[in-house]
Amino acid sequence: MKLAPLNPSLCASLLLLCLAGSCKEEVFTPEARPLLEQYFPLELNRPAYYQVDSVVLRAVVGGITYDSSRSEVRETLVETFTAADGTTVYRGERWVRRDDTQPFRFEQTFTVSRDARAATRSEGNLTFTKLTAPIREGSSWDGNAAFDERRSVRVGGEFLDVYQGWEYRYTDLDGLDTLKAGTELDSVVTVTQAEILDLLIDLRVAYERYAPGLGLVERFVDARHTQCISCCNRNTEACSPLPWDEKAEKGYIIREELIRRD
Image (tube, rainbow, N blue to C red):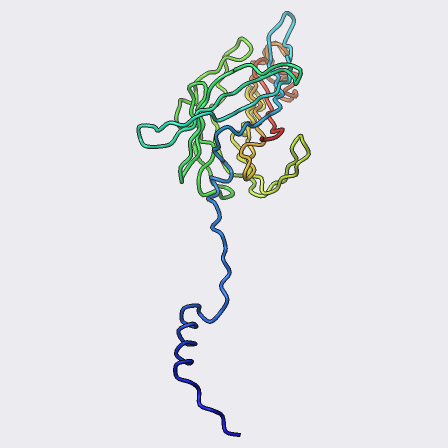
């Protein structure tokens, strides 16, 4: 059987279509947001609610007491301004209440900002670099480089160099978590900030966890110090093996966990 010759115009049209479309179907894939933008979202008027459990060590007659409390915190970014270097900075407000039967009362302001390389937060005259790019397990940075890490903080009537020796690093990029409201999270990033376990006089354990689209979901700090006076009358040999709950003389423990975001 003799085949009819192909129409030259039709051949040319088919060739052009193949060149334009590479002769195969193309699927559109939306561009993913940068990781810093996912883990450190900045949105005006979207409150985040946290449960905060804190313990402050206080010296009393006869020893040391652990003064514990629980509160609810609401943080909201309320406005933006442009810094001298052109960075867009968000000003936030932190409000606190003892429980849901009481009104929130204003506690402090803070600022946050983010660029392609880092996300920062400033509060109490201290600036912290919370996250850096790329988000890669094992990557480390000096998150407290903007201030003198030997700076003391007043806690429970005592002064403590809380931030000395901290080194930030990504230690988990695929964690799981469940919010207080029951929401299950995945792809949670953990930033370990301090793991100073000098069993004699200092304990510093600190970390933060971030979830995509939500930002900070957990913050923990355990900063305690002892001179082995209250427990052991300066007998360091007897003091060293004791648990920190028995030998600590000053410091604090705080855990802040996200309840929800509106």
